[in-house]
Length: 335
View (cartoon, rainbow, N blue to C red):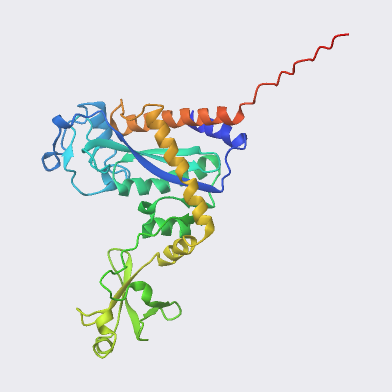
């Protein structure tokens, strides 16, 4: 039913298919915090037929959106709905929640896809790939650009968008290389693509050792002799014998995102991104979906999809509605 409504929106010309926006919102689950157990005491060795929510949880343990999203043991687990995530992401009292992920076309705010995941950033960012590929498969539509907040600016996500899908990322890059102690940051070093090395402010080369690290990055090291005799050492690496720079395997995609962030088009797309936030506000305040009634990943996906269908129907009705005909009063003239 959701796909049928989206198809009607496409046929009516309300999907521009140029720019998409993605975001996630937390929805509280039907789980009592007072009956939760510490995550360290929770075991997967439970009866899968105990409840439907438990069976659903066990069936999705290997899914990247659920059990495989993170190896971190949650602080608390709700036995009634073990897939729900204990979170305090709203900087308020912690609660059990699922993440509702929307992929929308920014021209008229049509929801192109919806995905339920655990309420953790890894799962929410991973939903990007799922929803974009599913939209392309089911409707034959792939956006030219995608806008999202900084949480989606990981190297892997940007690499997938640029290198595999040829989608321009209007997303700020997650970059922790900036230093605040007065020493040179990575941006002060120039990358020489032909020689595959960095050049420091003093003109010395930092070649790579060629070994890919666990974080999918290569290390570039300066010579110890160059650093020891360098007059800029106090501004570069005062506490280490040599300077090291890391470069992600997706650095080219990160550079694309950095370049887009400096354009006027990026300023426009940032404003358009608010449409997905407005949809979440409508979902919670008007449709009153601020707490789930069904449990388990399947229950969350069902409620989120039904709500997204209702929102698309409402938008379709408003966009296609015509104003009533104007009634013109005939003037009566007396003889």
